[in-house]
Length: 156
Image (cartoon, rainbow, N blue to C red; front, side, top):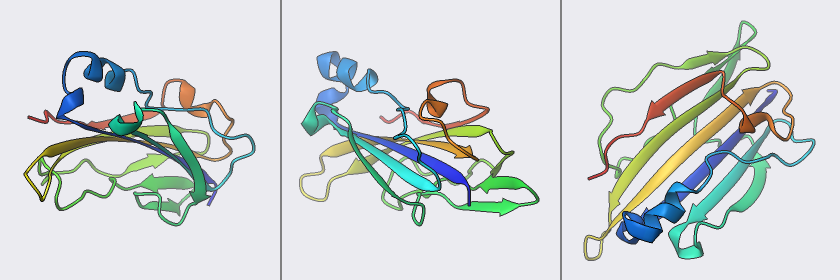
């Protein structure tokens, strides 16, 4: 399959819900340049509050991109990203799959709130999936996506 997925995961606690922490979190990018020559791969970028939202990157094979990708009739079908059973808010109704033609790219965003098992402290996560069908130049995700799905909700 000729596709590249960039999964950008930003994680924080209530310390970054307001003030200077929120400013740093909100400044965290949702797309990055790809390593040159990348094809049929998963480019993971993780940014955590505990690391001052400094990006940590790795490239993996496309076996577990966090969403289901299928080719059919010359198009790439992208199903909604997997959702944790422990995440809030619940998402009982999800958007339909998105189909991409070669050269098109999709940005799909979804956010979560988690309740900690010890003490009940909340943590939060924003996941952004940037997905291109076909060959990927390093700056492919730095422009305007062909398609966009926004599943972000208020995280009270």
